[in-house]
Image (cartoon, rainbow over all chains, first blue to last red; front, side, top):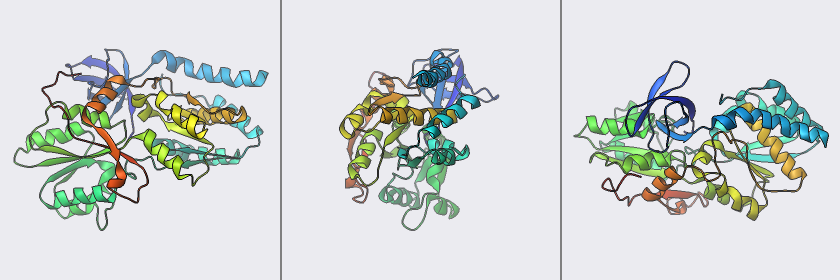
Length: 76
Length: 291
């Protein structure tokens, strides 16, 4: 039930809805009333609603941070 | 960008944990985490490292009470159109499931979203349509948002929503299982944030990591928990920073609080210990200014 899928906002349709591209050719109308989101943003979509805007910067840095955490451990 | 994949790093984490010679029991409460664990063989891999990860009862389907299911069956048998998520359709009540009734010709429809249930109500004005609203804080705001926008008069919900922090507390209070660390659900946490878990680490001295759903997310969460235990610490760490903020999704929280208030589910089912139900429904209605 709590499955959520990331997608990119490609068009704001109205106050409530946006068109989201899931990257595999699937595009869906998604309710955006729970988030503040713009074209080009990535959103986590659950049951027809965008539940949170994804943080691209954090996503890019996550693996690097993990690698660093593990190597600091090594030095100690 | 949002799917983390690094086999070398994954291997590195596993090797590091293996060297530690530990014997720990962690728990997660999320069907999607379970899926990642099993699909990728992580459960076996981690067991070899001395770590067992059990699944706590965190799936909305398994925390729905018999009474709630019976209510839906009864509604369907009385000619009402029953809509709910696909997962719920096969869940048995005392004698039968919604699926059984569907085969008998009653009007039961699986939907992907509450929005689909609203469309069904709009298209069938002469019928009463009920949506069985299950799910934790991930799903609750979607229900709340629809209710705030004046749904059609022939549409109602049966509220079966639950809250995660109280469910975790109830689980720990039972004290029946040893839990050395908690893996907290990523998607629920996008809504409720990471701060709400703090009291659990404080009161129960249990380390917690909020984590995503890639194999590497789970491995990293395990690593973080192991490190906390090694350092004799217990606090909330957020591994899923690409989606979860400390404060969570405030807009969604406001919408939930506007529509639901929480209550104790033991009123509904004395056999379920301490689970908390979010109950509706005294919502102000559509005349309110939208949030």
